[in-house]
Image 1 (spheres, one colour):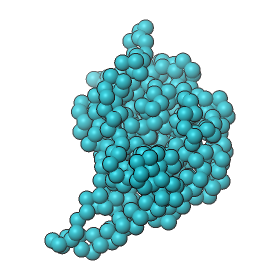
Image 2 (spheres, rainbow, N blue to C red):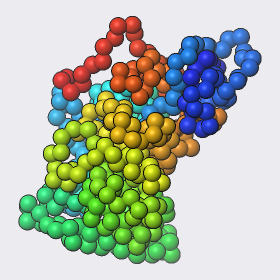
Image 3 (cartoon, one colour):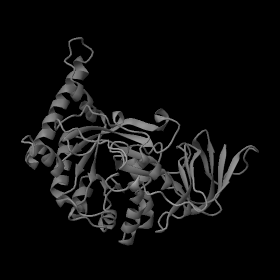
Image 4 (cartoon, rainbow, N blue to C red):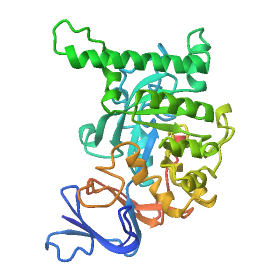
Length: 393
């Protein structure tokens, strides 16, 4: 057993900056609040009044698929065909990617990572812890969601090669066409899937899972692309989230009306793409006031994963509530990726992924002191330790 005592707890489950304890056993949270007596052999960590939060979650990145500056892997996009739902991010991930260690040192204990946005349908994302004994123990869900994309990326990838799509119309048409095929395939599979002569199709068999409830992550920056994504998702009854949602702040009523869940960002960094010209740090405040369910993403390594909390701070500076700031990288991030039964809050039964902060997370000098994953110390900051700049490795 492990006891974290005297913490200033932000649990995302009813306690916000209240003094309390956390009892952990076999990698799971057992009790939160006033724990009472514990066994004599219980390991004890005294938080000594420091802020204690759930491990942070990055709900959309490409960690492990793009590598770092010292590794040349670019395995996040398959440029041969625009529609390839049978791909799996799990099959390309490098568990030794330095991005995972960078995330861990910032208090990020779970990332949701997978294919990029060059394909209209690009394959599946996975959820993985940023540290652990081996891949098997680190993976929360090997195929969490199906990635789809609208906007400029598919157009540029294939249109510049003389292939479809070259327009937004064709992008939406290809997405619909594949969903129609997958739906028909799914209906036939339910009726005849066990018959020996059933015409098995690898890619449609993967995509048909969206009709069984698998989430669809739809890349869309511009307001028009966001509306197309919602239109297609509603048409097929998909369980979905809008990824990036850069101009979502311009249409908050539309998002709220359609109960759209949004993963917002990244907002730090330059406006290098035409689709990102309307980035705004006021987006968090506007979506929060409108009652839209959202979380924040880094899209790492395209924005360093170390900037996750910097982004939150800038949103809070521009009017988003402090509590929503923490929620946007913990519980909301877990809910919008369907892993909130495991992570995202400090409550009994969940994984003991916990951060004890030397400097509280929404201070510009934020610093994780101790990071636990599955109840084990995965990172402990040493006195005088400086952060490593992984972008220069």
